[in-house]
Length: 354
Image (tube, rainbow, N blue to C red; front, side, top):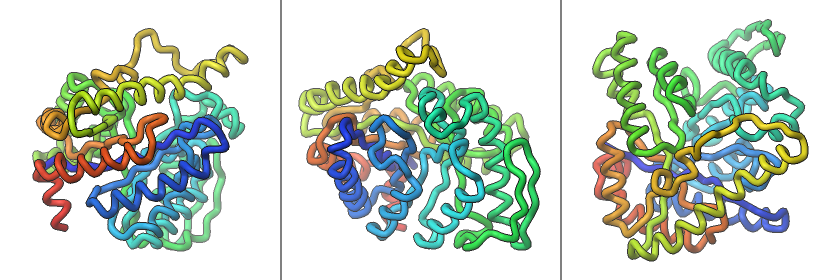
């Protein structure tokens, strides 16, 4: 029952290109809405041009007003960079504006880009604790009609009540990111679905098997385990063209340029400050096109998606626009995927009928 979504993560290398890329991103959102993509996921990254619209909350309002059916999810809001009450209000407003089309994806913040924390004046080492405290505040804000008080490490609050209250009851749909196996298993013990970052098929298979086993060990029944898997998503970079050769000609250079751009600012900060968040001793899966990139003619891409479906996960987050790839090439890839790949899967047919 595999379902498909688009991770709208557009790169803008120079400030002079920001306006164009942002406008193209709105057009891409409209196209996805027309073609029946289930969810449009938004990213949050700052200061480096790797996500042109930067602020997914503001951008989500624009996308929701420009579309009619598609859900808009956050993959993820960097919670440690936000005041939790402001974020609770903003998400509740989006939930109202959209009539319930919002998926609130929460995460601590980037594990790689120290300059994002520096730019917000927040110590990177506080990110996890800030996230954990903030998540509790956000959920309490949505579900406390008589207001509440909170006294924690980072925030001391006396909240009369949240306005507007959420449209979706008891609150907007929430999903958490897990970039490691430990994170995924932590969510399994809580009986919660998750968003998985880019991994090889082998790692995806092993991680989902461990996730399923941990859910069972935690006492959740078969129906709940199936629900959690169905609500979980894995991420891949996807390029579809008329032939395998054409797809690789387009995809490989764009993918490699994207990876170079995404590490450029980290390397610049390390050279200037000697500061690095996460030193990688081996190339991660996300930088290896054999693992992180699904490209080819529709039949080839469908076969790769069938391998992912066999893991038991419910959905794939497809990044279609890679690095410097043009909007025209991206949109052609999306059309081919939705018209010739997605219809081969029962989950897409179920979504299209709803």
